[in-house]
Image (cartoon, rainbow, N blue to C red; front, side):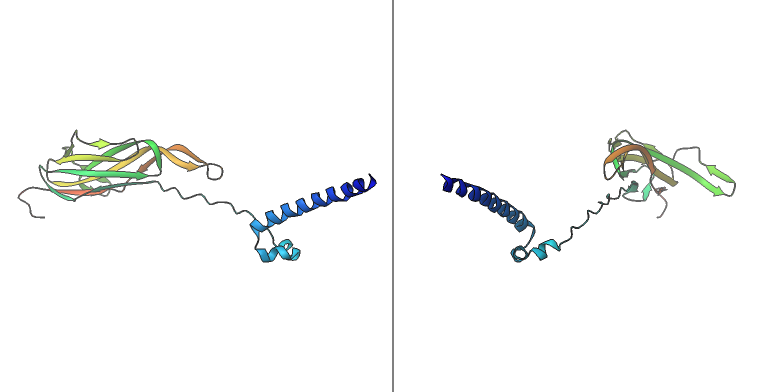
Length: 184
Protein backbone atom coordinates (compact mmCIF):
# COMPACT_ATOMS: atom_id res chain seq x y z
CA UNK A 1 0.00 0.00 0.00
CA UNK A 2 2.86 2.33 0.73
CA UNK A 3 4.39 1.62 -2.68
CA UNK A 4 1.15 2.70 -4.42
CA UNK A 5 1.17 5.88 -2.38
CA UNK A 6 4.82 6.65 -3.37
CA UNK A 7 4.01 5.79 -6.97
CA UNK A 8 1.05 8.20 -7.07
CA UNK A 9 3.06 10.93 -5.27
CA UNK A 10 5.72 10.94 -7.98
CA UNK A 11 3.67 9.97 -11.03
CA UNK A 12 0.89 12.58 -10.76
CA UNK A 13 3.28 15.60 -10.38
CA UNK A 14 5.47 14.17 -13.16
CA UNK A 15 2.42 13.98 -15.46
CA UNK A 16 1.39 17.55 -14.55
CA UNK A 17 4.89 18.83 -15.29
CA UNK A 18 5.03 16.89 -18.58
CA UNK A 19 1.63 18.25 -19.68
CA UNK A 20 2.67 21.81 -18.77
CA UNK A 21 5.90 21.48 -20.75
CA UNK A 22 4.00 20.04 -23.71
CA UNK A 23 1.58 22.98 -23.58
CA UNK A 24 4.40 25.55 -23.54
CA UNK A 25 6.24 23.80 -26.36
CA UNK A 26 3.07 23.79 -28.44
CA UNK A 27 2.51 27.52 -27.84
CA UNK A 28 6.13 28.37 -28.58
CA UNK A 29 6.23 26.27 -31.72
CA UNK A 30 3.45 28.34 -33.28
CA UNK A 31 5.49 31.56 -32.80
CA UNK A 32 9.03 30.30 -33.31
CA UNK A 33 10.96 28.10 -35.65
CA UNK A 34 11.88 24.56 -34.54
CA UNK A 35 15.54 25.52 -34.09
CA UNK A 36 14.65 28.20 -31.55
CA UNK A 37 12.72 25.70 -29.43
CA UNK A 38 15.91 23.85 -28.62
CA UNK A 39 17.58 26.79 -26.91
CA UNK A 40 15.82 28.76 -24.19
CA UNK A 41 18.18 31.72 -24.75
CA UNK A 42 17.00 32.19 -28.35
CA UNK A 43 13.36 32.25 -27.29
CA UNK A 44 13.96 34.51 -24.30
CA UNK A 45 16.01 37.02 -26.33
CA UNK A 46 13.07 37.86 -28.60
CA UNK A 47 11.64 41.26 -27.73
CA UNK A 48 8.00 41.86 -28.50
CA UNK A 49 7.28 44.44 -31.17
CA UNK A 50 5.29 47.37 -29.76
CA UNK A 51 1.92 47.92 -31.41
CA UNK A 52 2.06 50.81 -33.85
CA UNK A 53 -0.99 53.06 -34.11
CA UNK A 54 -2.86 52.49 -37.34
CA UNK A 55 -2.94 55.54 -39.61
CA UNK A 56 -6.44 56.45 -40.69
CA UNK A 57 -6.88 56.54 -44.46
CA UNK A 58 -7.15 60.06 -45.82
CA UNK A 59 -10.62 61.40 -46.55
CA UNK A 60 -10.70 63.53 -49.67
CA UNK A 61 -13.58 65.94 -50.03
CA UNK A 62 -13.90 66.76 -53.66
CA UNK A 63 -16.56 67.89 -56.09
CA UNK A 64 -15.77 67.63 -59.79
CA UNK A 65 -17.92 69.15 -62.54
CA UNK A 66 -17.28 68.65 -66.25
CA UNK A 67 -18.98 68.77 -69.64
CA UNK A 68 -18.34 66.44 -72.55
CA UNK A 69 -17.67 69.33 -74.90
CA UNK A 70 -16.97 72.94 -73.85
CA UNK A 71 -18.24 74.38 -77.17
CA UNK A 72 -21.89 74.13 -78.18
CA UNK A 73 -24.19 75.88 -80.63
CA UNK A 74 -27.29 77.87 -79.78
CA UNK A 75 -30.19 75.41 -79.46
CA UNK A 76 -27.95 72.44 -78.57
CA UNK A 77 -28.40 70.47 -75.37
CA UNK A 78 -25.42 69.40 -73.30
CA UNK A 79 -24.87 67.70 -69.95
CA UNK A 80 -22.91 68.95 -66.96
CA UNK A 81 -21.76 65.96 -64.88
CA UNK A 82 -21.04 66.43 -61.19
CA UNK A 83 -19.52 63.85 -58.84
CA UNK A 84 -18.18 64.00 -55.32
CA UNK A 85 -16.09 62.02 -52.86
CA UNK A 86 -15.88 62.00 -49.08
CA UNK A 87 -19.64 62.00 -48.56
CA UNK A 88 -21.59 59.29 -46.71
CA UNK A 89 -24.88 59.98 -48.39
CA UNK A 90 -27.76 62.39 -47.93
CA UNK A 91 -25.89 64.95 -50.01
CA UNK A 92 -27.57 67.56 -52.18
CA UNK A 93 -25.98 68.74 -55.45
CA UNK A 94 -26.68 72.31 -56.59
CA UNK A 95 -25.89 73.99 -59.91
CA UNK A 96 -24.74 77.62 -60.10
CA UNK A 97 -24.70 79.56 -63.36
CA UNK A 98 -22.84 82.85 -63.89
CA UNK A 99 -23.38 85.06 -66.95
CA UNK A 100 -20.72 87.75 -67.20
CA UNK A 101 -20.39 90.34 -69.89
CA UNK A 102 -17.32 91.97 -68.37
CA UNK A 103 -15.26 92.03 -65.22
CA UNK A 104 -13.27 95.19 -64.57
CA UNK A 105 -11.82 96.50 -61.31
CA UNK A 106 -14.59 97.59 -58.93
CA UNK A 107 -17.31 96.87 -61.51
CA UNK A 108 -18.83 93.57 -62.60
CA UNK A 109 -21.34 93.56 -65.43
CA UNK A 110 -23.67 90.56 -65.29
CA UNK A 111 -25.96 89.70 -68.19
CA UNK A 112 -29.58 89.77 -66.94
CA UNK A 113 -30.88 87.49 -69.72
CA UNK A 114 -30.37 83.73 -69.39
CA UNK A 115 -27.99 82.06 -71.79
CA UNK A 116 -28.96 78.50 -70.87
CA UNK A 117 -31.90 76.70 -69.34
CA UNK A 118 -31.98 73.62 -67.13
CA UNK A 119 -34.21 70.91 -68.58
CA UNK A 120 -36.48 68.70 -66.44
CA UNK A 121 -34.62 65.57 -67.53
CA UNK A 122 -31.78 66.53 -65.14
CA UNK A 123 -31.09 63.85 -62.53
CA UNK A 124 -29.22 63.53 -59.29
CA UNK A 125 -28.75 61.20 -56.38
CA UNK A 126 -28.63 61.53 -52.63
CA UNK A 127 -24.97 60.54 -52.79
CA UNK A 128 -23.66 63.86 -54.11
CA UNK A 129 -23.76 63.28 -57.85
CA UNK A 130 -25.86 64.80 -60.59
CA UNK A 131 -26.32 65.26 -64.30
CA UNK A 132 -27.75 68.60 -65.34
CA UNK A 133 -29.21 68.61 -68.85
CA UNK A 134 -28.88 72.14 -70.23
CA UNK A 135 -29.98 73.89 -73.44
CA UNK A 136 -28.01 76.78 -74.95
CA UNK A 137 -30.26 79.80 -75.59
CA UNK A 138 -27.91 82.62 -76.64
CA UNK A 139 -24.29 82.94 -77.71
CA UNK A 140 -21.62 83.86 -75.19
CA UNK A 141 -19.61 82.30 -72.38
CA UNK A 142 -21.25 80.81 -69.33
CA UNK A 143 -19.47 79.71 -66.16
CA UNK A 144 -20.91 76.72 -64.29
CA UNK A 145 -20.00 75.10 -61.00
CA UNK A 146 -21.67 72.71 -58.59
CA UNK A 147 -21.80 72.53 -54.82
CA UNK A 148 -22.45 69.46 -52.71
CA UNK A 149 -23.85 69.86 -49.21
CA UNK A 150 -24.42 66.85 -47.03
CA UNK A 151 -23.19 64.16 -44.69
CA UNK A 152 -19.38 64.08 -45.01
CA UNK A 153 -17.14 61.48 -43.39
CA UNK A 154 -14.66 62.29 -40.63
CA UNK A 155 -12.72 60.27 -38.08
CA UNK A 156 -13.28 60.57 -34.37
CA UNK A 157 -11.05 58.71 -31.89
CA UNK A 158 -8.76 56.40 -33.84
CA UNK A 159 -10.32 55.47 -37.15
CA UNK A 160 -13.91 55.39 -35.97
CA UNK A 161 -15.98 56.88 -38.81
CA UNK A 162 -18.52 59.56 -38.13
CA UNK A 163 -20.31 62.13 -40.25
CA UNK A 164 -20.87 65.86 -40.15
CA UNK A 165 -22.41 68.28 -42.62
CA UNK A 166 -20.01 69.90 -45.07
CA UNK A 167 -20.24 72.13 -48.15
CA UNK A 168 -17.75 71.51 -50.99
CA UNK A 169 -17.62 73.47 -54.25
CA UNK A 170 -16.28 72.39 -57.65
CA UNK A 171 -13.92 74.35 -59.85
CA UNK A 172 -15.79 76.44 -62.45
CA UNK A 173 -16.41 74.99 -65.91
CA UNK A 174 -16.64 77.42 -68.84
CA UNK A 175 -18.90 76.66 -71.80
CA UNK A 176 -18.73 78.67 -75.00
CA UNK A 177 -22.04 78.98 -76.82
CA UNK A 178 -21.69 79.80 -80.50
CA UNK A 179 -24.23 81.13 -82.97
CA UNK A 180 -24.70 78.61 -85.76
CA UNK A 181 -23.10 81.14 -88.11
CA UNK A 182 -19.96 81.58 -85.92
CA UNK A 183 -16.77 79.58 -86.47
CA UNK A 184 -15.14 77.86 -83.45
